[in-house]
Image (cartoon, rainbow, N blue to C red; front, side, top):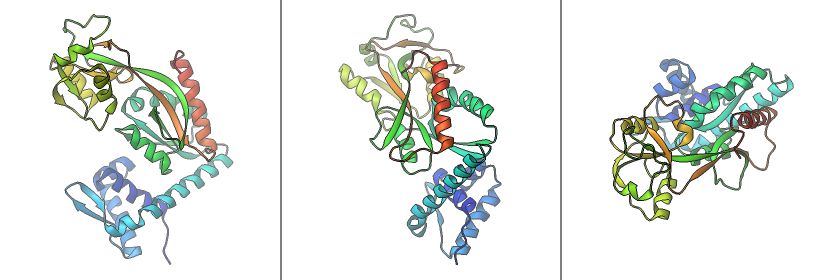
Length: 299
């Protein structure tokens, strides 16, 4: 008879998610040997090889791939059970899994979590940080996140709660001749060296240039928002970033609106078709209340 240990299964899934035993140990607060032992225990108990290594890092074997949906279902059911037990105890315990992206993780979630934990101090958070909104959507659909911060549009299988509009800004070196201008002309992107994130991370920028009929003077592709800000500060080029990520960044740059204003509409999303847990519903209420106070002119 197979023994089920959801903790070991969660450790295995974290190692697969992060592609590394070491990173999984750091994320979960375990030693590397403890994570390796948990995976080895499962392989011995089930008599299957679950993980292997390739150039991409730690990945599932073909046998592990076959078991993946069942592992995810088991861990999701365990978390849902934990949440329901927490509800019976008046939300004095439980874990909330929140899908999020960089600027929300930095600028929104710490203050929201502080407020929520002031009301429910026994609740633990697991933040699932992603580069792309599509990754957050996928986490919610698979039940690996109870809710998530996203930008519109989203799929019809998610229910959304509007938060606020986040304006996209041109960021320029402090001594740029347009640093004090009321807006940044779209045609100027064809002249100034442009620093962008990879296209698969943010297709919105491509749409902006396509609508304006402008081909940016692309010099650099950088997969990190704060690295882009540091490069702009040093005069290496200009870029476009959401206003939310620019707050208290620690870098010196000018941020001005685009010639044709563009925004991203931020929302909090849950799976449609099933009532969220009491814990998730309370968190959604807390987020909307906090956003209403911090961004009173938002959506």
